[in-house]
Image (cartoon, rainbow, N blue to C red):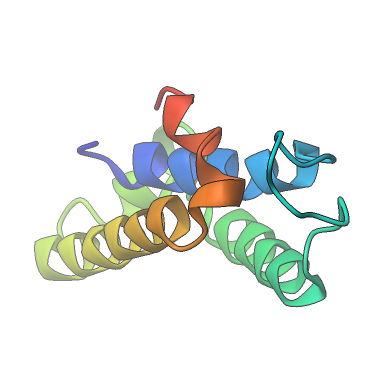
Length: 103
């Protein structure tokens, strides 16, 4: 995952995995609902990525606009990787399906 676009798309996949998980696996307890706070964070992330063009191609992309600002680009990429790590590891009973999604 070397671009901001790739890292952003991975975060979107992980957030979306929770939205699509509507039932518990055998032996797990779940009411089939995603916590409101997680849905709120997903909504905020979508707004953030949309406003900055984090998933865009070409000159509209965040990668393009930060190509001469390596410190800023690497800082954002580092934060996205931390978010990915937290999403993948915070709730194994919910997130295990997200780990199978490809970047």
